[in-house]
Amino acid sequence: MPLTKEQKDTILKKLIDHMKEAKSVIFADYQGVSVKDIKALRKLMRQEGVKFQVAKKTLMKLAAKESGYQELPAEIIEGPVGAAFCTEDELAGARLIYQFAKKVKNLKLRGALFGGKVLSVAETKELAALPGRLELISKFIFLINYPVSGFVRALNAIREKREQPAAQAAEQPAQAEQPAAQTEQPAAQPEQPAQTV
Image 1 (cartoon, rainbow, N blue to C red):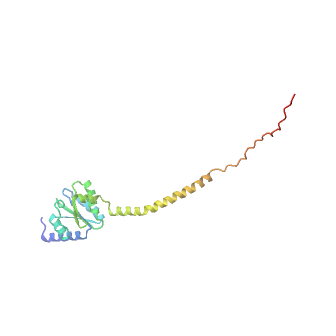
Image 2 (cartoon, one colour):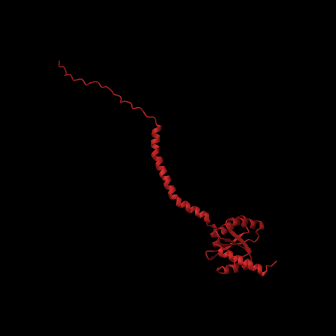
Image 3 (cartoon, one colour):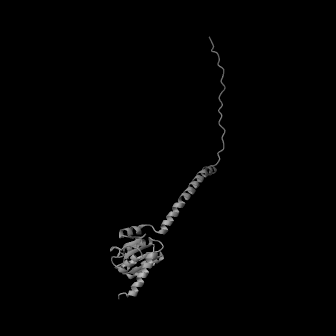
């Protein structure tokens, strides 16, 4: 059943609001994906603060234009289009769709709106391969702490080396000193003059 004008206007307004508040918008072709799989994907996205909405191509184009983006290329809105609106982690939508598509072959990344630009399918796949915000934060914290932990390890190694000889000395029984053996040598006798005959 076709949508009424009021329904289209409501969907368009919702899409525009989502696009304006999102840090990134990731488009996906979901043709051939079961309703069960779409629900599972939506659930994963909700857990990461991502909203996923399905809409007609014409409404997606209008919403992008109204949100300040250039014309969406045909490769982005090919097939039935769903959009993941990322409001927390800008990479979450791309990463989730990309990983989910490994299990559900019919799901395909179609492009993105990111940093004020329209990204191609190839650029969106590169975006999906980047580590997420939490992973980057944990790596950053590790790098900050690494020199300190390395310094502590070095100090501990030095301390252990200093303590090691003392511990070894305590473990070895003290050996009693033995007096040097004295050898008596006979006293030299005076030479006797040779006897003449």
